[in-house]
Length: 109
Image: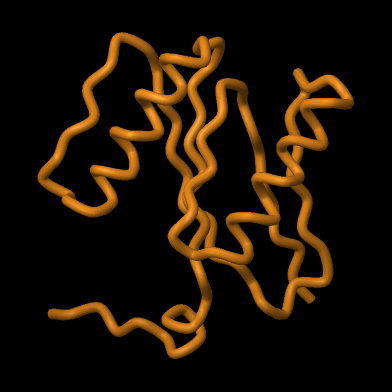
């Protein structure tokens, strides 16, 4: 039996948020490449020697608020994460890939 997907779910964009703690710049770049490849080709595995978190957040167009946070960020990093979130909200193909834990909540009416 096929699961019926609601019209609202079909219309709601999805944000891909990927994070793995304490990666250096080269490791983060390599992870981004693997993630982007996996999105294009689901048969392409992501293999690593560190824990990877991948969340798919369904954006609620009727949300009254959107809360994105990490407990480990400096003020500079908050600005960087904010820019990443803005890119992802504008471009459905953009993937947020960071080297620290990130949490995202859509606050609905």
